[in-house]
Image 1 (cartoon, rainbow, N blue to C red):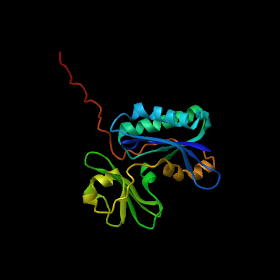
Image 2: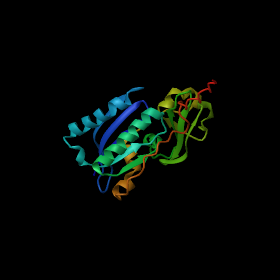
Image 3: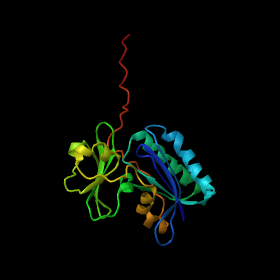
Image 4: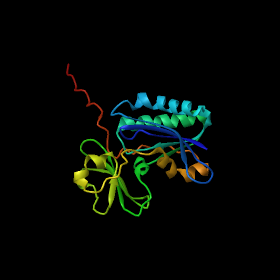
Length: 218
């Protein structure tokens, strides 16, 4: 089955077409990724189009959609999830959500810390052992991230605050679409019903409702 995987939870706008066989490992057919602080809304759909064109396939060839659900900034994350849901709905195929931090984790005997940049001098983080999430996701100041029990770390946030976290750094800064698909393999192969793609914001947005207008006396 051909799966469209995408993630917009970070500065990387990432899209991939991933082939999922009935048995064995998933493999990338085409992939595109652009690093940008803004512009997720302008870049995501063209990147999907580029992947399909390069593979010589129509959108109807896609049998499922996998999207990173964050944690991530409100606007960028919303762009990815709305696009994934709309694409899946248009083709009448299932959409599956995966925590974006899972897309940077790997199966290892070493306890792993995955940390993404949450801005505001904070990190989105989770810990893993044998590829299974053991803690998180959550958001915290770098000094408050529980890294003491971990052996290695990865993620753009881990790189940014490497001195504070104090662990050996792996060279994976952003979610890998194939790893996202790997996390949804059972659902894909079982043809599970599609899911509501719920974003992991972990904190309230900056925008707030305007205050009530002042009363004007006659």
